[in-house]
Image (cartoon, rainbow, N blue to C red; front, side):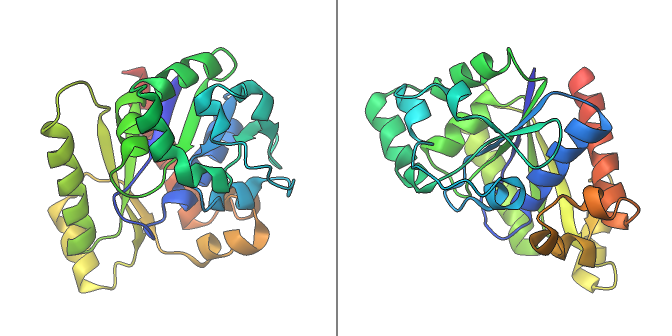
Amino acid sequence: MHSIAIYNLKGGVGKTTSAVNLAWCSAVLSARRTLLWDLDPQGAATHLIGDDRSAKDEARSIFARDVSADRLVRPSRIAGLDLLAADHSLRGLDRLLFEIGKAKRLRKLLDGLGKTYDRIILDCPPGLSETSDQVLRAADLVIVPIIPSPLSQRAFVEVQAYLDGKSGRHAPMLPVFVMVDRRRALHKQALEKYPDWPVVPMASSVERMAEERMPVGAFDAKSPAAQAYARLWQGIERKLAG
């Protein structure tokens, strides 16, 4: 099993969009046994691919060992892709993790789920917190969606500096430009500065995900965005295999 976290210090940078599309690529294109774990209290990923089952505010209980993670896993609306849904109880997750003092609780949960799944995609809340700290140390790879703007790039540098300043292991990080409009001067400059970073273009098909409630590859597989996510996933698989 390999776990891939989708994380950024900032919100509104296409984090959930990337998580859902990469989970679809894993389950459908690579035929991996895949779990999407929604750790963001806003529950956007849960809304996009969930089954509309009413939330019971149990998501946090997994970390307190009140409920087993396996019991809360449910099928998504995509064949081969399961979901650990988010709910409002995750708003108190940072405090819980601090109170129980288990710095590797997430790692142990991932190890247990790894008996069932080949790939676990983590949709993480923004910010630097106890939750994000555990994610960044437990995951095998962290994908960082970045809008090609100075502020977004600065946030990535801040996360790198934060991790490098702390002792202990942390996952390698892969920055990915998202919402790219090559007609914009700032975007062109960013792409020229970091030509090796993967690119996902701005696309109407991505905006339609909220309406379709499906990953873009499921309803517009030939679109530039769907193909970009497929290429990104292929690169992730190569990186994990290496």
